[in-house]
Length: 391
Ligand SMILES: *Cc1c(COP(=O)(O)O)cnc(C)c1O
Image (cartoon, rainbow, N blue to C red):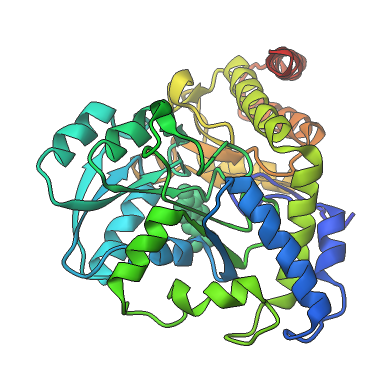
């Protein structure tokens, strides 16, 4: 067991032993056909995860490179896009758009609330938008976007739908072949993630999927202002990964292939249900401690939560007490800094780990003089989990 700590931040997430073992396999040549076979299998599994007949790209980088690739390959400098932002990571697209010379308009929700489909439609009715970006789960607020509402609201206007799945892919369904609202044109066009969130592999890979409409958009652009991030340079490489364009992160691909194997063995529907159940269970258990969840229950993400302390909890002491016990959680961001914390509950994090974390959280609150019932919180977690899985 290499893990000595419980890393329950919203990414990187806990890495299981099999993935560490894969990571430390002997490094092969990047043009070795045995390596190419491992990579091809992982790419096929990635296509399955997104259920796409388009193209997937897995390259060295982080989620931010994925964001950049999504935009630079679909829209040109001067084009108008709409950024739907539910917090810090939605806002990150503003910086990306500025760097690429795009005209970005932004719809920002109040923290903890989602942007409504009506607001999006009102904006798109102004016309001239080429793409809309939506964050599936915003890692600052724990708000999940309702794709059933947002995809039709965007696609009605013939605009590309770009989905940031960094805190969602492999935990929430992102089916690129799905016809939302029963309409053949209402589909997700681009979705992307990184290796270190719900996939449960160490950080280091950008994972991007382009559907047919997005690939058409790239072809229409001809040249783009990037070399490494230009998907046209990677298209044939992703089909034949032994061909050289830029050196693959060999060991990370071993780890990713193992990560995708684990996901495939669990099965996508089971993995999605498990995350939904964990989200409900952890939120219910934290409420037993007098904590509040920033997002309303209907908008709360299955993968991570932004949690508000009861009054008079000292944030620094709370999180350092937890760290001493071996539990790492993240601070709240923006105006919530000091008032709450963020906890990741995604990927290959086990229920056992989460139950242990709940006990530590209860103890840390007791150390600050609060009267809390750890057994009750743990029982609530177990009950809510079982009930949700049962359906
Ligand atoms: C983590 C995250 C990112 C950024 O990913 P990096 O790997 O840190 O570059 C982008 N979007 C969301 C929703 C995230 O959670």
